[in-house]
Amino acid sequence: MKYLPTYRLEPKVPLNKEVCEKIIKTVMDKTFQDFVYAPKPALSLCAEVSEEIKNRVKNLNFDRYRYIVLVSIGEKLYQGYYSLVNFLWDPEKDGYLSYVYDTPKFFAVATLYYLYYD
Image 1: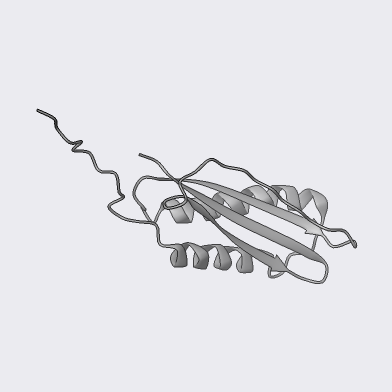
Image 2 (image 1 turned 120 degrees about the vertical axis):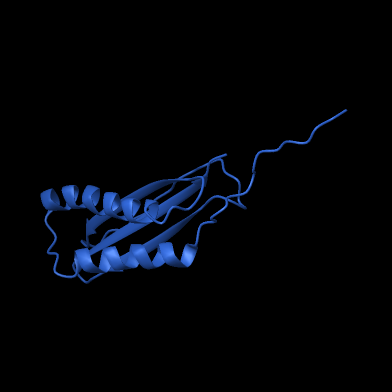
């Protein structure tokens, strides 16, 4: 006699992308509204903003998800910016959301990676 697994494979509370996008946009707009670029403050601000985004998304209690938040700030000095990240993930359950705050003097990029955890 064979038994089927009895544990859940799907989250009870699935991730809501629209709510997460709104959180990222709100935090980024509020933080960088009056920001003037300087290298040293930008470094600590990246950590603060990424932690705030992660905590706000965690407080939504989406079931069985782990989060990685990356924030980058750069000054515009006629250079390009490329970012590449590789993951081995399930395209149905895992993914990412990204938001760019862009001004004539600097840019800030926030990316939230959400990974389903069984």
